Image (tube, rainbow, N blue to C red; front, side, top):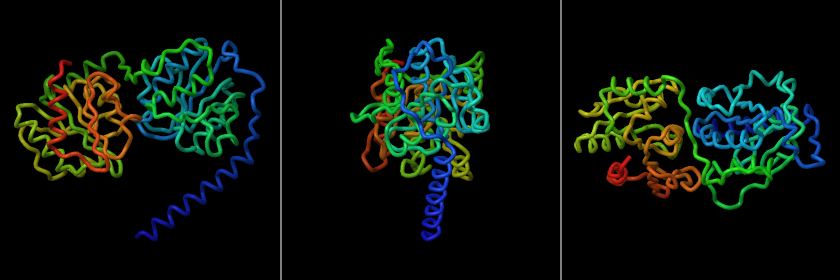
Length: 353
């Protein structure tokens, strides 16, 4: 089995090398700008985020608003993979959400400025290539890896530990160094709800038999961040025994793991919901407990208090202890005990909302 995995990785690396070579032949070498960017001349902007992770998209939202603050007369489009674009459906700073289907005609849209919002810690071939395919005369991204082969205005990689919202925002500050922009500490993520969405979320929450003091536990996470479902069931039992209703949420993989499992009294298992209804529903919880994963970022953006489990990722970069109403439970290279999580939830629930 390990041999097959190794072969698969070798094939993937080989395919990426071939793709890189083909793109470099196809795309003209980027020409470095000869003068500073004239903000008044920018009319169309493209923001590119290639990966398909909900949390990363939510972390990008403050930068989208920062772009509109720096270039108020410009139209802003966002180019994403084909997942989670509905997260930006009510984002007033965004004119249009594009997917890979738009790549063939991207240059015809006449972008003046394009941002590659791939993370600063690793070069993304896809993100850089999509940004280059925009044809924008100025293409901004972090200076790492092969970025100089695709982008022509490179921002320095952040060297000081900072929250990911600030890291991404540094690209906008690089593009508009003279703009009067809010400081990093005033760049919260925020989920924008449309007409009637909150009301539908309240109805769904009540239909599950929950009230304003009920707690949601999100079971999902990737790789080493994932906890065993029994861990969540044990925590749910303790919460139910304390008199609080609990709902277990997760994606298809988590619901499959819960098939045939006995759910304790006072605990329910949420059905699968469309993303926007899930956001409106989870906004009704008194608190959400989650590992560092997309729904954790969604809950924070929706204004729900959270207990955030950080065992294998950096809380200073992805957590929200700096925002009121949120608790980070960090346990280096190990999962927290049920008792540790229960105590963290009690601490959060004792605070006024």
